[in-house]
Length: 267
Image (cartoon, rainbow, N blue to C red; front, side):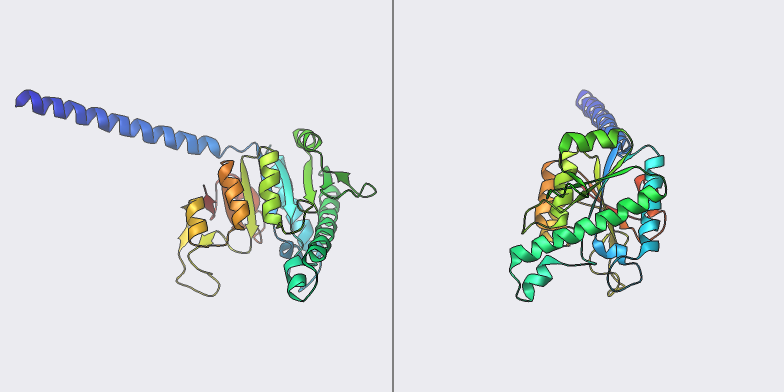
C-alpha cells in the first residue's frame, strides 16, 4: 500500500511537472508569436472618412499613415488592404437595384482611390509605398504580383493591395485574409471603430462583454461579425491570428503590434 501510494505520489509529481512544462511551452509560443515580422492591416474605408459623412478626410488619412510609419520604424513589415465604404459599397448598390457584379466592380474602383490617397499620405511623410491592384491599371499602379510584393516589403516598403480580389461577390475582408496568406503574414490586424470583439455592440449595449481572446469557431457560431465567414475560414485554415483593435485612436496600431492596449485575438 505504501509502495502504491508512493508510486501514485511520484506519478502525480511527474504529471504536475509535465503540466507546467507544457504551459511554459505554450506561453513561450505565444510570446514568440507576438514578435511579428510581417503583418497585414485590414481597415474599412469608413476609417478614412474621419468626422465627415462621405469621402476622404485628408487629416485622418495622414494620421493613419503616421500610425503605419510607427510600425514600419519598429522593424515590422506592413501590407494593407482597405475597403471603399466611404465611397461606394457594392452590396448597397445591389440592394438599390443595381446589378451586383457591376456594383462590386464600382466598389473595387473606390478601393483603388482610397489606396492612392493612403499611398500619397505615406510618401508625404517619407514612407516608400507601392500600390498593387488585382485589376490592371498600369498607368497608376502595379499589377498584383506576389513575389514583387514580398520583395517590396523586404525592402521596408508598405504594399497596399487594391481592388479587392479582383472578383465580384468577395469582400475586402476576404481579400485581406487571402493576401495575408499569400504574403505569409504573422497576423491580420483588423482596424475598426471599437477596441476588440464584444458579446454585443458596445456602443448600444453598455453590458456587452469584451473578449481578450476567442476562437475562430466561436466567432462563426456566435455570428460576431468580426470579418465575413469566408475570411475567418481562410485565416483559420492558414493559422493566421486576427487581432481586432480600434484604429481611430492615434498610435494604437503600433501599441497593439507590441501587445499593449486593449484588443481581441481571434485564433
